[in-house]
Length: 114
Length: 111
Image (cartoon, rainbow over all chains, first blue to last red; front, side, top):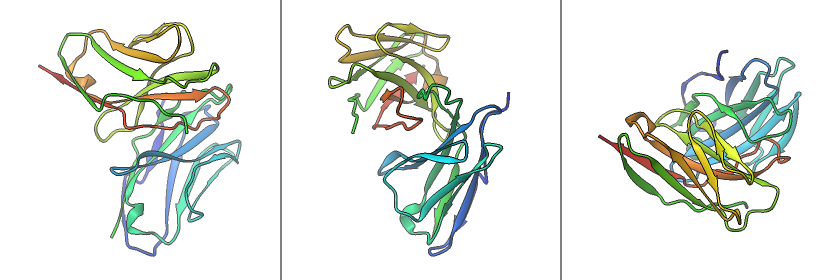
């Protein structure tokens, strides 16, 4: 079974631009969560989607948004990029049948904002 | 904010058991303990989880104290490929898929 895939793997943007990152979960997984990882703040939860609905949201500004499609694929968008948005963005999927914490992470998208 | 306390770093000799401690003294009765690891430049990898009883799978064993205030992840025969940051996480089973990661323990397995 294929793992979680994320595209693109690397991205360079300039301040003020916007960016869209994509995540394809493991086949059959209906929950997709997004995390941001930076050297200073570590791994931080952004949001979770299940059946196209946002189920949980972390403490991030409204510039960070996401959505999930009917095939469970998910995208996250960051508008008006700031230098501090440079990070590794990780997507994780799970069956979410019992809302367990057992998640499967993708390799991440490394975003650099200049 | 659910917190756990882990030593920032540990060393282990290749082939020996790696015992990674985690303190979660304020854990609630229905909070699970999860362990993940993150090898450099990769996404975190689920290892194991438990509630009260000790658990074992093909990767590791999880020992939870009777009072549930601490736990130990055991890698029985550490290899160089086990060098990673190991995260101990508390999570309610109905909290959705929202994990709160702390600083973790950087395990260095040495030849």
